[in-house]
Length: 345
Image (tube, rainbow, N blue to C red; front, top):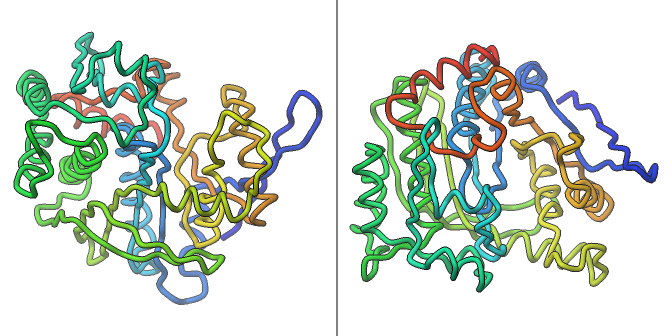
């Protein structure tokens, strides 16, 4: 793949490296260039689950890749890496939205956690310690008509992941993400056959480290190509890779680990990160430092295809803080068409 390195300059003049930004066109141009069909592997690094809008964007990217260069592609994999050991924060909209879901273009909020807001604010839970109230989820589904969530609940009940009326936040939103992808893919790919199941697998990183992973997987075919969407907790990968490369020195002592170290060796294993451009002024200096440190420690850049909501914000489709909100039943088709038109995919 033809890649270009982005240099990030901090106020003190220190140069930040650590990622190479790749365009969709470059992915299309380089797919299977050596004459062999190849697997294209993408990843989201979200503590709980990717958001509705960026999920649509990623699926549209995948469709364009297969439509234009399907003869060079074997299968497409999109892994969403969860992080149960990260600290939960209700005030962080990117985490809080999963216990207080909000619907795009609506003022409604639904507190679905077992714990109260005050308790969540005061105790400082790890994400994996959060549980959701199934009755509250059911009430939300009834009011919002987001039926794919009911399918997720039914699956979890059948597999005995619901105990005493509660379910773990990662199980619910992980599986719900896959059912949402099914709903969106019926519009985008026109699919009617798919399979969702629990999976166990082993992945091998570019540095030869191997890890067992387990979670939920959605598979279906489009134009005879296998598409695999997996979501799983990657805490053990984040922690072990950080421990291997980073040692005891920590510039940002409040942070337990630098998870971007794991993302760097995953990128070295041909995974492309779907994420915001870390060169933007809005990105915290700490995050920029983590990219740089990951490159310095591992020797690998993070390959990044930007999941950029800026065009939607500029067009007034979404607000600055609403990109994480759920898309209501009657808006999904419109949002899909809008994103496709604005991004040219």
